Image (cartoon, rainbow, N blue to C red; front, side):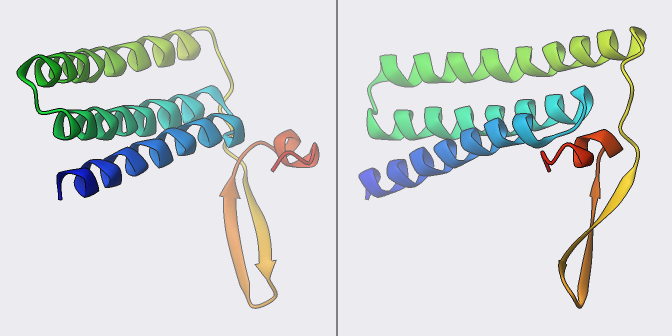
Length: 123
């Protein structure tokens, strides 16, 4: 049972880490990239550390995993705030254009991004 729960947490952490990496590559500006990387990576690392603590229930391992998790949970929001503030104060442009993306003839989806982001074929 313990192996199954830790395996599910490991898988969830890996998927969230992958989503963070894809979000950094796919998002058009620094603010959305920062949000994608901080949220998904922090949750992914939390799942990985929780899986580790369940898989190896020794006191030293649980304390180390908890300490790493607490450090990341405390420093990631501060770092994200500093990056966002620096980007805002230096005048980094926001991508505010909403571009329609037609995936099916009956359904139109909207994606937020810069015009040049979608013109370059990177969408």
